[in-house]
Length: 294
Image (cartoon, rainbow, N blue to C red):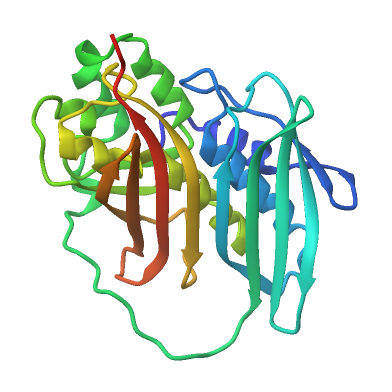
């Protein structure tokens, strides 16, 4: 499944936070393709911290987060958990990630005791089978000459080695100068099997959810992104709702679109489906989208 067999183990180690006090955890960062901590990493680690203070019979059903400052990949991150509420059915936690004495990230997460209820969902859109699509190792080298720095290819392959992520159509850096419908689809799964811990699967989906959600904004304008040098961007806020059980080590379809961009910001929204068509997750993210100034 992966050309980097140790990459998933490294990512799992990254999510295995050190417990300093009852509600204080410490995490480290991995190599990034940009000189700041990857937002999906901070979100996933914060959710791990929150989940470790919640009874095991309650699963995460939503999170809402703000990225406040760029994270320093060379320094540890301290996660302070606030036990907001422990109710009969729901548990709420607030997590603040701190570096160098300043908050860099804020997360609110809610967990629910499993129960039955009304059921309906949106239909899964059409998409080709993931096995028919090129892997990252097959696709990325095709676009090396379009990147500001060709070494980005190797750095992306290392940074994403724990995840098998496959684009249905060309990514933004493959569509520079050719605006198209603001929609993007990718299939993803972890590059190896995971334990059955539901929190782990939710946290890994959170990690991956920040990788491509802003792509649809770039596609609408024929922009290639930071690797091409025609856009400066960063995640501003992120929200997820976990509807149904899923496994992050099995194929998930990430169907993404952008309804709007204005004021130096763009909005991405998405649904994540299991291969058999169950709607597992809804995601919304706003990002900073600026064009470089002369």
